[in-house]
Length: 100
Image (cartoon, rainbow, N blue to C red; front, side, top):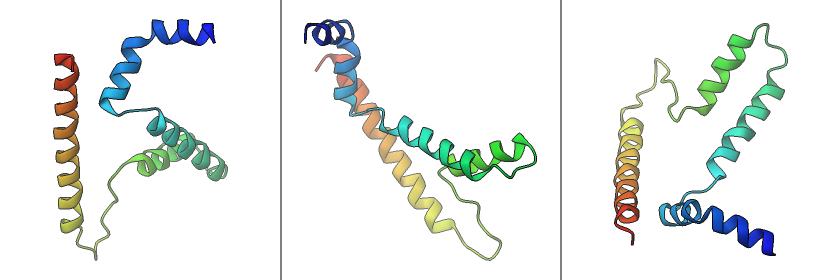
């Protein structure tokens, strides 16, 4: 238990910032899992470039629009979510910077 207290003491600022900002390692773990699944799925690729392209496509938030689909409404929703997330993150950063 003493070792945990020492480690937490050394990383106190990081722990406080993570709690204040509401962030964690869940997003990183999610990305790592997607990569592992995609690599397992892509054993038949002839070159690594195709695998990297598939990883980038799976990681991106957007979905390519097919010629017969109208993605305007969906794009507006995604843009709105990103804007709200940015505003929320900015408020949290300012709060942490003030020391509250």
